[in-house]
Amino acid sequence: MTKKKKAQQEEIEAQQNASTETATAEKEVTEEISVEEKLQQELTLEKDKFLRLFAEFENYKKRTTKERIDLFKTAGQDVLRSMLPVLDDFDRAMLEIAKTEEKELLKGVQLIHTKLKETLKGKGLSMVEVANGDAFDAEVHEAITQIPAPSEDMKGKIIDVIEKGYKLGGKVIRFPKVVVGQ
Image 1 (cartoon, helix red, strand yellow):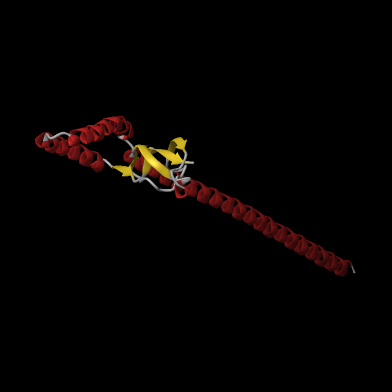
Image 2: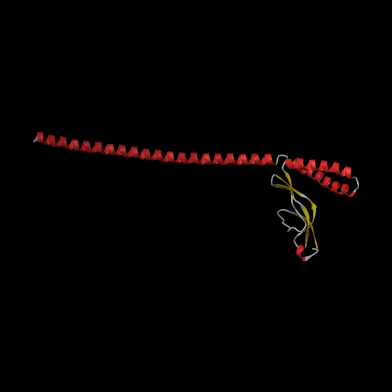
């Protein structure tokens, strides 16, 4: 029996060793799976961070490009804005010269006036179109004063344009100054 017991003992030990080895192998596989899952989660987080950073950079590039384009469009805004009173004076001079009989003087001044307007137009300056009888819009016009309307249909409408308005590249740099009927 000792041989039998010994054989049984060895068999039991072999089974225990096998189950211990199986448990150890299962534990190692479980540890490998959990390590793999952790690495997979970390990889997913890093991918997410990368995509967010990339999107943020793309937005930055678009924003700075737009800002540069806007800057170029309005780069000469201060110079053109300072030229507007000169243009106004020129318009007033044209009206007064037209009243005289000096036709040659009128032609010469008209040529200079046209050249100045075309040069400013080439730089992106355009006049805001306003006419008497147009509806007053506080977004587009600057009301200097209100006077009693000459008729009922002129209430809330433009009676007179005091000063012309101008745009530079679609942006209003001086609003037209108007008199509104009340």
